Image 1 (cartoon, rainbow, N blue to C red):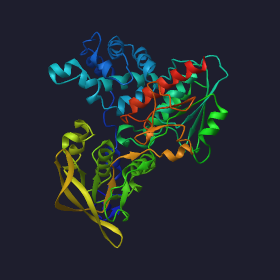
Image 2 (image 1 turned 120 degrees about the vertical axis):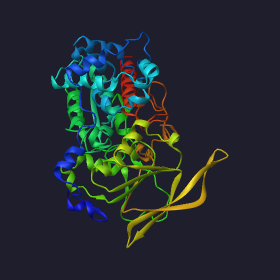
Image 3 (image 1 turned 60 degrees about the horizontal axis):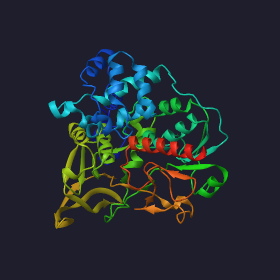
Image 4 (image 1 turned 180 degrees about the vertical axis):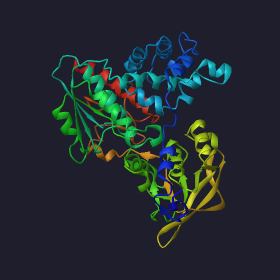
Amino acid sequence: MADGLYADGIAAGRLSGEEYEKNFADLHPPLDRHEAAVEADRCYFCFDAPCTTACPTSIDIPMFIRQIATDNPLGSARTIFDQNILGGMCARVCPTETLCEEACVREEAEGKPVQIGRLQRYATDAAMEADAQFYERAAPTGKSVAIVGAGPAGLACAHRLAMHGHDVTILEARPKPGGLNEFGIAAYKTPNGFAQAEVDYLMAIGGIRLEEGKALGRDFSLGDLTRDHDAVFLGMGLAGVNALGAEGEAADGVESAVDYIAHLRQAKDLASLPVGRRVVVIGGGMTAIDAAVQARLLGAEEVTICYRRGQEHMNASAFEQDLAASKGVTIRHWLQPTRIIADNGRVSGIELEYTALKGGRLSGTGETLTLRADQVFKAIGQSFEAGVLNGSTASVELEGRRIRTDAEGRTSMPNVWAGGDCIAGGDDLTVSAVAQGRDAAESIHRALAG
């Protein structure tokens, strides 16, 4: 065990190399051929299957499982990719326990659903390992489409547009494509560079040009795109990080959980990544869970998640909450931060106030609790930075500080569509972003085809 484990404050190298490797190994090892066949045999192959209805991308789940059962994993992958070209990543990160698997009739009858997510991974991994390309680019149409953002929505949109023969240019602000899949997902869910391997697999269709380090509002405007292209798809993520609203929030050691996860995902050596001995995470969603669990896996001695409401209100699924608990994370409810305690400008603790629902409204009780901490992560949500629309907010209508769209992804601005986390009414899931990008591409194709 490394000496850094016992160091107070924020320190690197808290564990041995073997411990890092073990801690960040694949969360769910893949099924082998026999295991996949046995699991596939549990499916009832329901007509009008509730699992398919529950899937945001409407994958024909009974069909792809039947194809696995008949030892046809490549055919199964084709069925998945027809609806969700990022089906490999979704198999790893999609909250199947609250979507398709929760709807599985075996879940209702036995409390043990068919492991749809792991079967989906089995099929899609087989296709990617064989580099089985199921789609070809149609004859060029002479039409060009600009896509802002190389996240799940933008990538799904680009692939479908390329299938239809349109020229696609993706403009990505970061130095690498992938968006949330590359920068925002816990490392133990997508090890071995899977996010970039999936991007390469998708881009192999051709007709898609990627320009990295290009940000809307800095390097180009929405007006530039509508002038130079026949259509535009906005697939930006949520760049703003919500503040705690607590006294002393600027102290060293108070960090954005989103930024920390992104830094971890790009780290070449996990032993070089500093983490606190006592860590407090503020929030109740997937980001809070991912930050807390990874802090423990990096060697933090005590990790506590504090959420202002009850367990039943947390956005993180029951599975993710149980995962955090299994890794030694303590989850405390009905607490909101009021003050960061600092010594010489560095975090040494956090004061929280107990909360309660009064008349349906959340309010503080006046009773406080102090926790020792040398690192505090903010994971209370992100916001869309509408300013990047570069003065076009008068044309692109907003709703609840995000972009308003119709059912096809059209915005209020002619020839401009949007999807993913930047649009109003979304659920901030990778699988939903893929569906929105795919459906917007079909709408764009219909418009360009007249």
